Length: 322
Ligand code: UDP
Ligand code: MG
Picture 1 (tube, protein in one colour):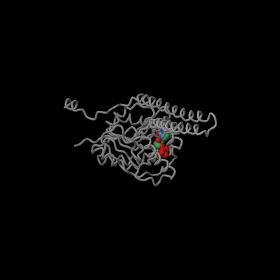
Picture 2: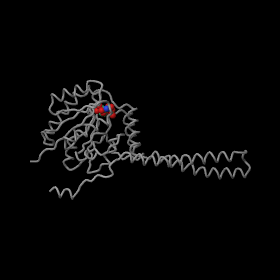
Picture 3: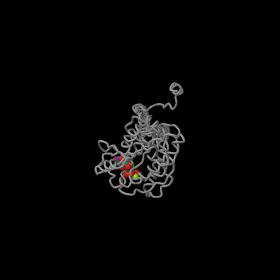
Picture 4: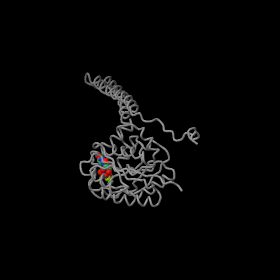
């Protein structure tokens, strides 16, 4: 008989005392049914990651893990933000699991999509992205900003899965590779598409938060978007460079125009010189900043020390181990 695979569900929690009991209740049911269907092994766990909460979150996690066999937790030394907490959880869970699913503590992402994710994992997918098929329950503002975010990111040259947040299944293999992405400015949903392997999507509808408030106010969202762009693309620098080229071009036209006007005698003394200088120097400066920026961009990508490739199969190794 096939040995079942072990699943870890990683959940970052920041001041989530209001939702934890309900979340635990729902996930317990889900995990038990998955175990019963033999989709996952009995060693599977839900791992809460306490992200330096200021309320009773960690106490609650500890008491749940004592009472419930399927639940466990880790805690961070202080609040490090959602993305860092998630990485801590993923990199810890990969030591015990064959596959890891990450989700939020408020269960806004339908946990019934887990079945499909796990089935796709068994079909050979290494990453399964949870994708929102509808945002009916989000407020107009949240929907507008969130969808605008994906479009803007695309324009800025960041490769993203549309309407996918951090609800995803990743195999142990993917996480072992992910561990080599040592960057500090984290934008996970941009990193996983870089890793490759066979991937798929699972669609679900996003629900409302059943208790508590969003821990992602507009300010955090904007910061997050900015991190995403500046961690994944040097396009903003290129824009400056292109702009510089355009201004320099305009300056040439201006110079010709000014000289013509001067010859025609239609200018006051000094005008030609000043207007030419302004345009020309402006263009040169912009262009120079752009060039300097290109080099900074290169330094910036190098300092990330991202792995340049991932070997997905090694025939020599696999033969040797036979
Ligand atoms: N979160 C975290 N650290 C933070 C902020 C949020 O671990 O500093 C967690 C939070 O507990 C939740 C998840 O990140 O599990 C998503 O947050 P939230 O549901 O508030 O965001 P929204 O769904 O409104 O975008
Ligand atoms: Mg939420």
